[in-house]
Amino acid sequence: MIFNLFILLGMALFAVGISGILASRNFIIMMLSIEIMIISSTVVALSVFYFVSSGNIVILLLVIWSAASAEAMALVAFYRYMTKGQASLDVTKLSKLRN
Image (cartoon, rainbow, N blue to C red; front, side):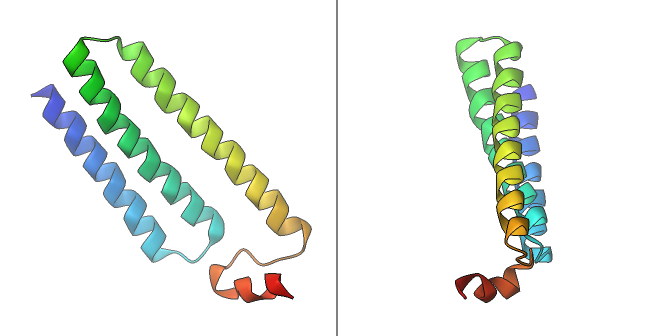
C-alpha cells in the first residue's frame, strides 16, 4: 500500500515538472521543472530500493537532498553564465547567444 503511494507521488511530481516545462518559456522555471522531474524519478527508484531491500529511510532522504542540491548549484551556474553576457533568459530569444 505505501509502495503504491510512493509511485503515485513520483508520477504526480513528474506531471508537475512536465507541466512547468510546457507552461513557461523562462529558463530558470524550466530548469526547476527539470529538477522536479529528476527528484520524482529518484523518489520512485529509491522507494523500490527501500521496499525491496528493507533499507533505511535516511538513505532515501539523503539521496533526494543531494540530487536537489546538485541541481540547484547547476541552476545557479547557468543563471550566472546567462546574465553575465547580458543574455535574455527567455528560451525563444536564444538566437542572440550565437551573435
